[in-house]
Length: 440
Image (cartoon, rainbow, N blue to C red; front, side, top):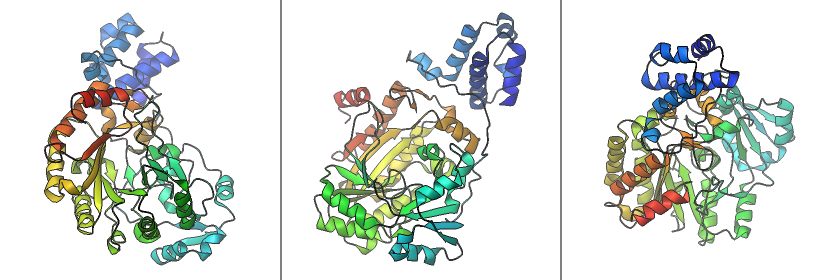
């Protein structure tokens, strides 16, 4: 990154700071994507002309060849090149074992703290007056990749008083799905390179509430329609062997058959689920990607084989299952890998046991881009064409997203012709294109 900035400063002295920044960013991204050097991008003629507009146009065409060829609107995000603080995530296959566990006084009377002490006997335990006050006193550095990377070293057991149920934080101007979130905890023990939670780095640990009865009481009074789930701000099941949250939830759902509930996960932690015969209002779902993507981008999660095997066990245990191909990652050879994934899935799971399938392509807020670069400098997901979309998030161009959805649906439909397929956080225009063509 530094070499590019130095070269641009040297060769384009007449450019202002912002123009130099944009050119350096484009050069860096093209060089990373194509494996070329500065002199293979910037010719002597470019340097001699000192024409910013022509140079930027040339670099944008080279950086975004698909969008350029399709004459799509190109709205680029060119943040300052800055390695910054925090460093790589240093992901390693490790068992979750927090060093410090803080708990509010009421947790002493809860079963969850006893479970946690049994699982983590070597952790340091400290009572705190309140989570809010404790975090305030810690003076957590906002937007610190260091804080986020080390979040699993600390676990908080708290009483949630306010945010029991929320509407799904659907992206602005997207086709709404009516999903609601039972906000049962915050933070994930997995390390996905694209995770939007990296933008919430002002929370210095994993947060778990001990008062699940209050959540269920609120859920009973809410009269919420549509599907409710717990997998938005944390994985629904990754820590279920420790928290045991699924058991009181399942008991509640048996008494409230009108409530439709989803456990959404990238784990294979289903032991508690298999001790209960579920009602028809419960769905267990998995986010799926090819094993290649799981290994390179979904660190510490269960393998594809383990996820599908867990889904099969849940079906045998009486559950309906769902699958989320979200985010779909575009790369050379993606078609082959996703078709192979679908072959494995439908070999193990019958279509009649699948409640729904969702599709969504890679997307994230622009502020996450430099975080990914700092934490995962060897990532390849940022090498693809990501432009500011209808919701100001970085997304693949609309034409490419439409192509991806059409292909995925064409591979799924012959095997699951009655199964509900829907798009997650996608704009109305793409929904309409796929609906009018008979895809959805």
